[in-house]
Image 1 (cartoon, each protein chain N blue to C red):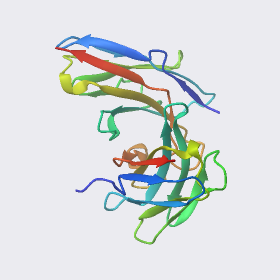
Image 2: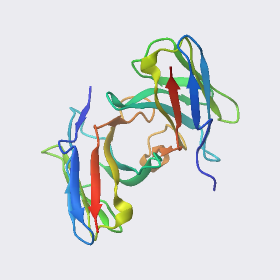
Image 3: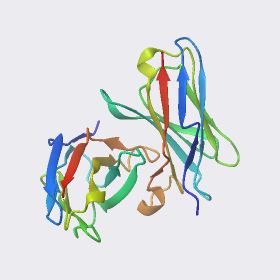
Image 4: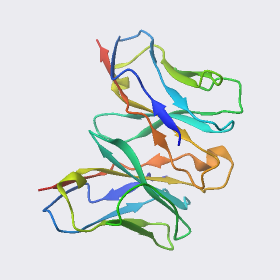
Length: 117
Length: 116
């Protein structure tokens, strides 16, 4: 079974631009979460989508948004990019969000490295 | 809010030897999930092991095992017979059953270096 895929793998943008990152979950997985990883702040939760609805959101400004499609693929958008948005953006998928332990284990993609100049 | 602390920024181990990575967490919940993830230089996060708080038995996956001390809120990872491929950043993570979804709260990570 194919793992989580993220595109693009690398991206260079300039301040003020916007960017869209894509994530395709493991086949059959319906929950997709996004995390930002930086040397200073570590790994921080951005948001989670399940059945095309945002279920949870981290403490990030409104410039960060996302959506999920009916095939569970998800996109993350960052508008008006700032230098501090330079990071590795990780996507993770899981079977569901129901209580049940193993079904909620998250499997991560390889990440998209974003550099903002 | 829950917090996860990894007090060892960096650890070293000789190949074939055993190393233990520390993790403590702060929570008022009685039921939760704990994870160890490995992030090699490729940056791909790989699940190493998971533990449900209601299970008293420590989880084990081949050379990887945990020492889960619920009262002390401690969740250490033991790697036996260390291999060069174990060199990576290791993250401890917490998931609350009370918060909707699968959000993970991560520690700062421990870099593990394996010497040949």
